[in-house]
Length: 307
Ligand code: ADP
Image (cartoon, rainbow, N blue to C red; front, side, top):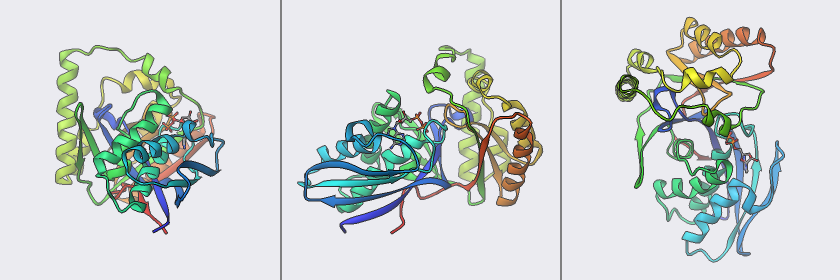
């Protein structure tokens, strides 16, 4: 195979009580990317559609992640990349992760799959380091493995794929405002009380068990974050009203997607997720900030070939 076209999913990191460890992949939100082998060494980004992003290899996360893979491989040639960017950077739904994960997944396919999923995450993390100075895995892991993933540890890197209940849907609203990841980090406290810790790991354990058992009520009861959400949500206009009305419309629970400004709700069934979208839409119209809304099944597969 000389060329491959892939779908690179958007992802939700910081899934409620799973702050910094639990992420999930989306199905209806994502970029497309074409990667082809070249005899010339190195990586060239030849086209980017949809957004203004750097074409220089070292300044684009796809280039940086790809170079990490290329350096680790014994392949003598290089790659050309075209990116169809549909996830807006800075939206909190893993725009940079989609490009990093998509690039290394596609290259691995073209080389006959010499690398494991864990190794691909490690390469893609180099792209994340370029985007946010931290080589975090909580978006690139679900983008590569699909479904929900838990980053149990960084040293050594340990990614635990969590099964996804069949009928689980996400509704995501992206208010068109910019929140810098560095700002939303700065406002967090660096210590928590024992009581908050106990609440949080109780909920995270409950959420993981709920996902394993497809127990939607347990998932809903466990989608609680009393540590990060109350502080970060202050930066997102209309957050409390959106969340309250999503729950009223039947969502199991929700929270901030990544470091915001996107807000997500999880629901059982497409119909409920659509109803939640309608309700959130009505709520957000009163806030006066333009927004996008996405409804998506959880993507159990991760990056996938589309041609
Ligand atoms: P997100 O959380 O949606 O990934 P970030 O703000 O963390 O958004 O990352 C976006 C940053 O990464 C921007 O500064 C953007 O210019 C840079 N970037 C470089 N290459 C890409 C790419 N291929 N896709 C998205 N962002 C990229």
